[in-house]
Amino acid sequence: MSEARDDQRETPGSSDETFTGSTVVSMVFNQILDAVHNGRLQPGERISDSEFAERLGVSRTPVREALQRLREIGIIEASASRFTRIAVVSPEQTANAMVVWLALYVAVINEVIPTVPPEVVAAMKADHESFISLLSTRDMQRIATANAEFFNHLVELSQNPPLRRGIQSVVHVVRLGSLHLPDQIDFSALSESQALLVAAARDHDRAAALGAMRMLGTIRVPTDWGDTPQ
Image 1 (cartoon, rainbow, N blue to C red):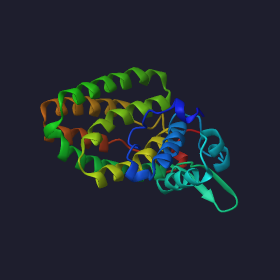
Image 2: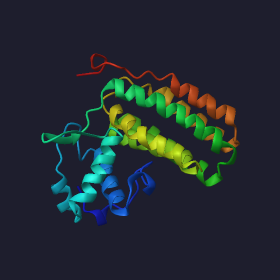
Image 3: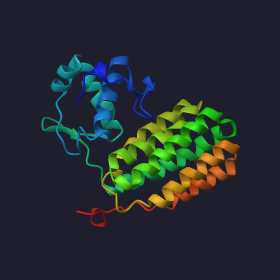
Image 4: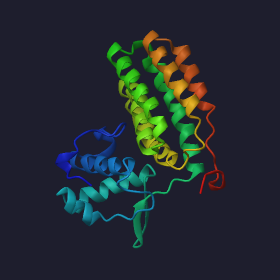
């Protein structure tokens, strides 16, 4: 993992300090989350609060608090006196989190679509094109990151802090769980829904945006490990 000073960029959906506590806790939270989403920390990998404290140049207290926050949103698993590790998100957990994310994102659509500024539409279009270009690589971590960055643009426009926090609490589980599902995700439907959402944001068309979300809702997420490739 890089030192704190080398990674000041924000992970989509995780920069709200009211969600992670103090500035130091927020920094540690984002550092660990970024390492998870970029594959530097793998599902099932054990982690040490003292090791992270030393690497980041902070005390163990904010590291422990950040790990607790990550545990609350399902990214960390812990067993008293046994282990603390990156969660292995099951297909059922992914499917359940996706249901919640879709419901909350519809609320974002209803709030922000009528007022999306041109610069956000341009950023969404650029991220959509980046997402499309990555599909041939089959690099699920990069694909999941591009997808999250695309959808996060509208979340950032929301003036509803509880809504933003609700999405933050499930989107990371969806991202982590999707890494196991490269052969189950309907990338065609996902790509088309992104394109529809860009057009809807450009035209301030709430009905079209909700149609894009209905298309997303047709993507089946398996709920059993037996449905996923071994």
